[in-house]
Length: 313
Image (cartoon, rainbow, N blue to C red):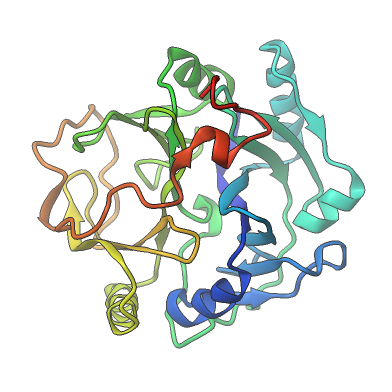
């Protein structure tokens, strides 16, 4: 599949009011106009696209869909053919859903773990329309998507890796340097960042571990860091630089209990002419001062009761 990256993500949350403050005033997101079909949800802009993140009212905090951007209509049609050829069931989004997402067309399907994915093309945008919620240099999205996501899986099977590589056309990046068993992948068209999605193993549990977003400069990382400290928000890791990427970042927890990694590129990603095997996760900093897996990761039957039962998780 010719996928660019994660175009948008959607969540359910019981903390909409907290997000309404946190999104613009901590992260610098812009509150976007909610679609008429979904006026009770909260939408955030990170660039000139109609939106990148959507938070829908719910009883629990969880990710409900991950939207992958196909390059164009022909690649979108090819993606459907690939899903059909592998026997993957999918549904076609109706006009109401497409208008809610602000896209031409979309399809929906689940991966072997149970996470909901969407593939779309042509999301609506307005040039020079982004206005950050606070003084901020902006986010780097454009042709790389909103950033990356690390998800936890209750079981670790070869079926998931096969699905990501053979069906979705992902490129394998590596295992990383963490103590856990986490696999990193990036889309076929991504040659700017090391990964778009990663899956870690959390026996019996599911949820987001973190989302990484790229900001315009180190100053944007530092100013966000100061705001997080001033508000006494929970940190996962302090400022630091990973071994595998020439980036500076830090991790903190948001109102839904997963972490945001706020990232600035010190230099372009070096690519992966060979598979890296870092001796340690970071060259400096990234002191772990909070839980690596936050409260968003819970028993699978609690997070996705429509898929899992206590016996099946």
